Length: 360
Image 1 (cartoon, rainbow, N blue to C red):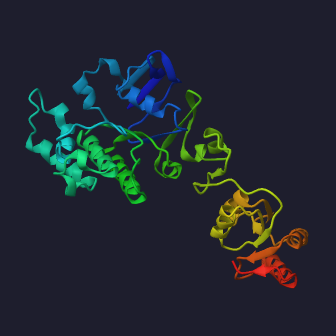
Image 2 (cartoon, one colour; image 1 turned 90 degrees about the vertical axis):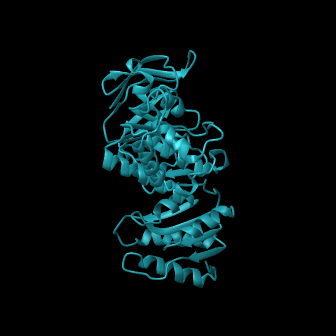
Image 3 (cartoon, rainbow, N blue to C red; image 1 turned 180 degrees about the vertical axis):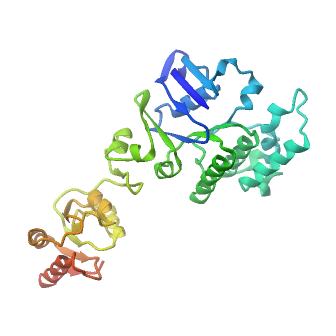
């Protein structure tokens, strides 16, 4: 559907993203990720012909984009840009209907079919209640929905969206992405977009393109991109960390000698509370396959862990006791002790003997 060869995008002679070679197939959702200023928007504007390319070539369905007429290209590619100024004195419905202009001819007269498609697009994004409201009187989130409806109404094979979830609350983010999935599933539409919400990009994308240092740094499936420590590298994360498995970020751990020992067992919020309060803490004994493990490893200044499916060893128990002896307080998050975490019951009893146990 879309291919670039040695494409360089930027402003004037200044290259923002260079030597871009990508292939996009029909019915795929392609997501660009990368830090602010890395060139995602510049690249999207260039492949949609909103910006003049500096060098290289862009092909839409094996035809050079420069060989398309304006209306012909508008029937192939629709575009939704964040923060684009919209005309005044237009209602939301009128703005959505403007997506049909490539099909109306010289006089721009809408047919009954054009109007039907506009109403359908407005309904699809849940914007029927603001159809007659002037676009300048809508909220940022409402405007985002209307701009998506306009792109849908244009009825193209390729949709290019620059940060379509900006300004939207979580409910409307999920609704918007569900609409895109529906278009892909039912119409085999190709979607190329940029997102800042990495957890959503990980869930919705067929392929992810990573932009860093004025080039495409890596391209792959979500499983390939969200593995190891790559996201921390891509965004140059120093203060905190991003967990690629569960798709969440954590603030930087509080370093220093632990003041509190947390006996693990189902209390992610306690770890985050201690971090917010600036208290260095130790935590354990936690199995490496425990659901809490990523949070504990990200936030605890000292973590004692055990191999998955193995009973807690005597050595780990003694290590934990030594740390508890140096802490002023112990919090136990575990209500039940089974065969594998029986060692944590021993830690609880030790904390009671030391008179250091307190409520979470």
